[in-house]
Image 1 (cartoon, each protein chain N blue to C red):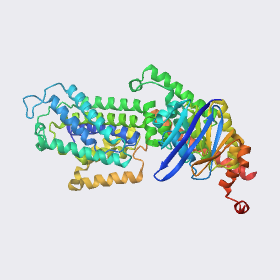
Image 2: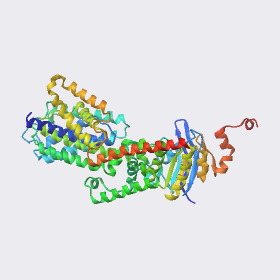
Image 3: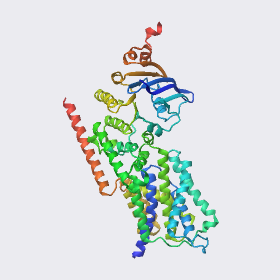
Image 4: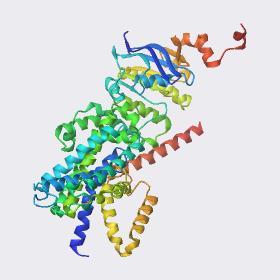
Length: 260
Length: 310
């Protein structure tokens, strides 16, 4: 399958520090790819590079065969790439419904004048936005919390709401940054099924950063491992969990191996 | 108290209200603080005065109808705000606020030194065209315009910028563009308020548009409650009338004014309205939020208890 996202020789330096060094990998269309590595390995930096928050020092990022370099984050969102954040960034003082409704804005095209004069196009499009937002909440099981201010949601549901808000943008590629952080095994299990389900229901490709190995091993078809900004391994779950380099990156070198 | 006296205070409150509503969009809904909006009021006041003052007066005006003064004053403030925005809207948070402060003072000093517009002595010959009815109509239009804007995808995008700028970007919102539009609209409101102010006082002077005026506008917005149009309306009415009602305290007047503002901010930290709207739909929304919170609490509590029983 043709890759939906292809990253080639991507490098990002902050002063003398190489956060991402010469990393290349693909996200095949319709797949779920895992991005793992110890803290500080450069995973979130790669997300920031893909979404245009940072500009790369060198290298290429192509989405559906077209370069996304040099575009503002909102333009990249327009193209169909969206993400969630490691430290949740919801519109905290808005209700669950308003969070999703705001993100639905790309489905409407009425102008300022049409909004202020309340013209027919405003009314019909606004109705469609409300229907879309409510439908998404229904599918994702958040309808029971529709009018709750996002800040008051339980932690696990805040992460879920962030995913719903991302889905409201009709993405083609969804980037999830540690979606299971702070979740208990039960919630992680649920999230794993959810990721698989939205990939199928919304026909997306997913790139996910995660530390929970059961989630990564359970849901990802392909795994990329980073350490100190460099790719050290890539492959299917089984290969990765047996790769000596990966074990070394996570657990350090055993004394025996060091002696040998 | 005579009706003329009360009417005078109401007119002043109505003029302030226009500027406050504009600033409410910028500060309350888009999350950008400004301490330079008196500068936009000054631009509106002077351009408006120039358009409508008689060519025979000194300084000479164009002697055109009042409506053109309103349009011209608002447009002039809007155009200036566009250039200010181009330079300063890329600044983060507090730095933008400081840039507006510099702008406001610069405008005042420019008018202080341009003799064509009367310099520091001021402009005495502005026709008194701001009537009670015209101000009332302007306020109604200003409120409707703002309410309709805020309750649309454009208004929601501005609120998203206020809530979480990075997330707004990632959600496909052109943050710079929405900040710019919000700034321009707020400047046009301030400019129009300036035109009404000039034609109410019939005399304008640069020192009327000092930092104190900018601060007063921002205080009213915060006092009314950030993100609430009804709060801005109430705030403008209360805080314009309060100094007048406190005239009995003579020299202690401003001390009581300050104490009243502090008292309200301490007892209601989110302002008079705390982001709520005093409309049927606004009240329904606030009630729904409260209910949702109560339901969520009971649900979570029940979940936790059933978890313990397992």
